[in-house]
Image (cartoon, rainbow, N blue to C red; front, side, top):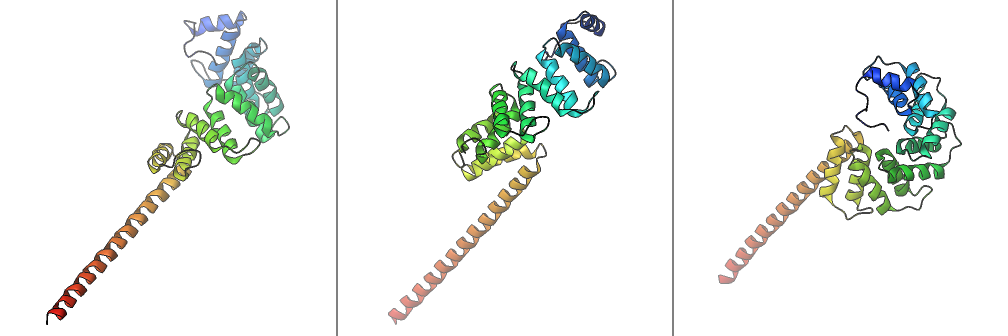
Length: 250
């Protein structure tokens, strides 16, 4: 993706550079129109400039153009075209495009459904730090779909995504710690990750956290009941002992 700080001092400089054929400027200008950054949002203009950059093999522009076709922004929704542009960028190593192409293969949109291809592109993106791809890859390893089931590998990728604040990964990582799948069982770690996901509004994590505390309360209540029963039994035994002692002394 383009750098956070543009090398152009003004929007006019950016526009001139784009019109002069600078692919990076064309891509940046397209993103400005797509997001409404510094200019009125205009998806048609976004597609125009992104296409010019994409045709010059700019990977970021190719990925953004793919998103336009995937979502129907400025062009009719066309998953086949989305796949085409995602592939162009993915083969250049763009992690966002690799992830997006993986999604299309997993869902069968614009390409024949192929889980092996999905995993291939998720893995490529995950290795480059793409958090959603890391989460999806973790799911494949946890379920054993296409790849051999490997809980430790699932935990590895869930952790990578969770540390980048992907809430479903945080929730799944919490479950792994709670059950001891792929990692040493730890209620403390389970609660930590459930809490981080729950704070982001993850409903499953909120549910799991509620169940955890409910179980803890039930466990504490059961332990208190057992302690009370033990104390009562001890008191009864003590009274019985005192009674026997009195009888033997008469």
